[in-house]
Length: 266
Image 1 (cartoon, rainbow, N blue to C red):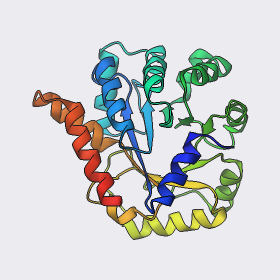
Image 2 (cartoon, rainbow, N blue to C red):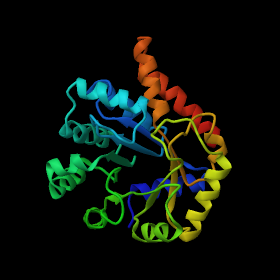
Image 3 (spheres, rainbow, N blue to C red):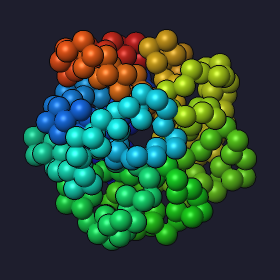
Image 4 (spheres, rainbow, N blue to C red):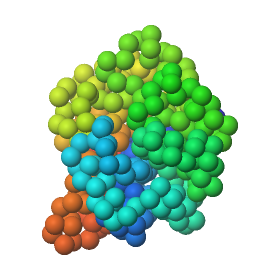
């Protein structure tokens, strides 16, 4: 299975660095600002994750929850998220976009309708936080038929045998949750411990790209640069909040911060 996600990882590996993945919430703080932020990030990050705002985001910490509530308050809908992706892809078609959210968003539309909207808007991958393996096997196969990467999740408590089965069923990318916490939490384990688990995952199938997420900040990102990719989300959402409080342009401030992060791992 080859798509833009694979190509992004290949490019990063040629440059001898991990891929940088960014996460923002669709519609935060307005639809226009959300698109402007995504456009700015697409010129820096290798892969952009875009979250569906959810009123009960069980896996998300305070920063992302705040972003989601702002977006919901401003009236963001599922179709608005697809429109944001479509508008980005009209001018920046080579940046992979991964939608991230909860199964309820798929259930509302129906799986086939949801995937058709993904395909038509230019979505390259999907992360469904509350649809674990093996319950996701059928939906994962549907994604593959559309050449959309379904990203499997592995946590610190995933057994070796279970990890082997998950990786065997995975597409181009595996997401390793670095710690048992919500997003944006302070790292409760050392970078060495995270990398040790990462190496065990990579040994199962070295060809599969494995990214590390949860707790990635400017303080920790440099110590984890041996991963295939690193996901930064809460730090970006926090910067949006700070910019709005100070009545500054979040696009400019986020751009500066993400460039600094990329420089650390390059």
